[in-house]
Image 1 (cartoon, rainbow, N blue to C red):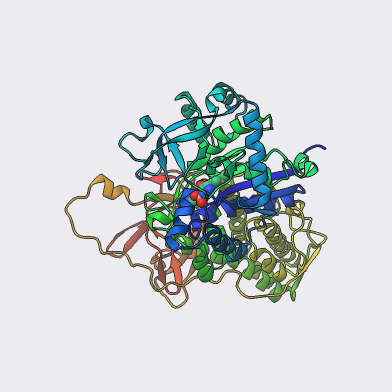
Image 2 (cartoon, rainbow, N blue to C red; image 1 turned 90 degrees about the horizontal axis):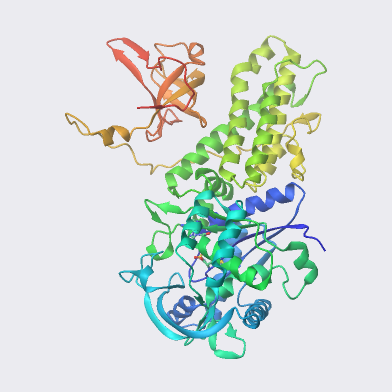
Length: 626
Ligand code: MSP
């Protein structure tokens, strides 16, 4: 039977403590990819789980005075529900390494490699990092700390079984060279090639004096090293040695998502284990970056972990999922801050998307009695048809490259294009002027664009797409990615205005800007803290009840943002559209007359005169000013 299933895995997490948003990050990313692959019609097998053996877990259980099994049962229970349940992780199997099905696989696999001569018994003398459950040689630990996490390592000397990694070094290197897509992104691939160049030593794969693990077949004094055990979960979860039909339909994994610190295990040790056994290698190991707090990795042991459940309680599951997948370019490290989560939600979801839906539904209600269809003589200028088609192709491409953040950037561009269309076509004036065909065309295109957006968002968000669709009068869930085609929706939309899709998050605790101190000169570093960029004005309107203020929407090259500016006495709003200006991008957002202003436009003033600062010649929005 040929492989017919798209097989996706996350790392299996240590249930040594409650998981944090770093763990949720990998799992939510995998979930979005699983949902996308289902929508493009593939049969998907998406596996996550828990890595329950090893010395660290045993010690944690001892500290708590409970049995290791009770200890892991409790934490694993909470990982499944409420954590993955509330994050709506659509896994097909949750594997626990303490399950009998897994014990059988590990022992059978160990036995096969032993028979083939790739596992032998010897003496291990070296260092062990307990938090990472990793063996290290003297040269690697240098001053006595783990090269990965920097914590002290323990001296170990004992009889051990070894896996003949060194014998496969050249084959592994050649495999990576022959399969450029095997390790992604390319930086991780280069790191692994450099690691191989240092030479591989045989790997100690058993421990004595520890009973929380899977015994070596025929030598129960030894338990199998937790990483050797854990990596094999990917075989257990698809019926290796128990369900040949399932196994052949699913093996090998199409994508293994892991954090960058464990790429080495997944892109060197694991494939060599498979080579030694004669099994096909995963098609891709993708090592994403870390969520950082300041400059350091978020982790429970550093005491800087953020609880995803707490964030869901306060901001909702979609805001959390959106933030995780949109904020950080997938693959790179990124800093987590709650301010950024709030800003992302307010700007992209509440302001850009929420307002688009609200305005579209309200206008269809007000001008067309709640129902719109494309007139036989459609208005010729249908910008959104073109833009939606462009974005559909781009999003598909980004999703196929697993580039989730950029896929969402593309979706954001369509949202902004639709908002811009409202400003440009001014449906209220079309209604006033009785230009019925144009009005119907514009409003139909907006509704159809929103429907397309609901399809794009379906892999990412779990509540908003259905709520958005309900306001458009669509009561079926998205079933197929083909629905992203503009024009494939219903011929008529009968709208039902509803609650705001994403209510704006109000935080009274937002820190206010600190007053700058007067100094005669500032260093270049201080100046460089200001992020100045060229932006293009896309809309402007007076702020009700404020004589001096205009609410201005600018395109900053990445997205549309709102800036409240005190230039009303100097500029009529309509004369500003299309002007290029200089935007202070990283000014702390501030609420002015109920509007969150996300930046400042530079202006020169003297006495009563004021003029906006503009680039001397046209340049792309987003160009840095320095
Ligand atoms: N049990 C091993 C994996 C075995 S896989 C055969 C393990 N577990 S872990 O609980 O420590 O989880 C590690 C994974 O969680 C990382 O590889 C990454 O996917 C995710 N993350 C944990 N902290 C993270 C961040 N701060 N940022 C991003 N992802 C992080 O290692």
